[in-house]
Image (tube, rainbow, N blue to C red):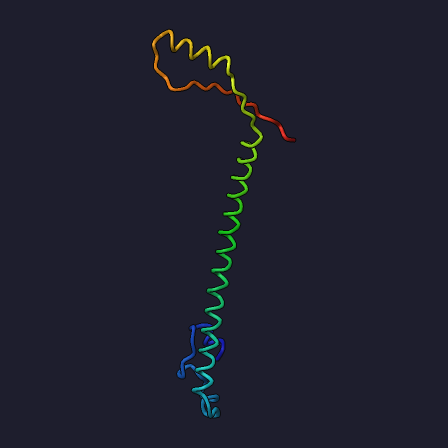
Length: 115
C-alpha cells in the first residue's frame, strides 16, 4: 500500500488489496494516516529543495561580495598625489586665454602593491 501511495501521491481505498480490506477493521484510518504521512513527506521534500536553492543563492551572493571586497582592496591600495604646480600652470593658461573655470585639480594615482 505504501508503494501505491508513493507511486500515485496518495492512497485510495480502491487500491487496497482485497485480502487486507477484508481483515482490517480501521481501513479508513490507516488510509488517512498513510495519506497524511505522504503529504508530510511531500512537504519535507519541497522544503529541502527550497533550502538547497537558498544555499545556492547564498553561495552566489557570497561570491559576489568577495568580488566587491577584492575591488575595494584594490581601490584602497591606490595613493593619490596632488600636482599643485601643474594646477597653477593650467590655471594661469586659462586666465591668459580668458577661459572661465571654477577649479583646477590635477592628481596622479599611484598603485601600491600590498603583496
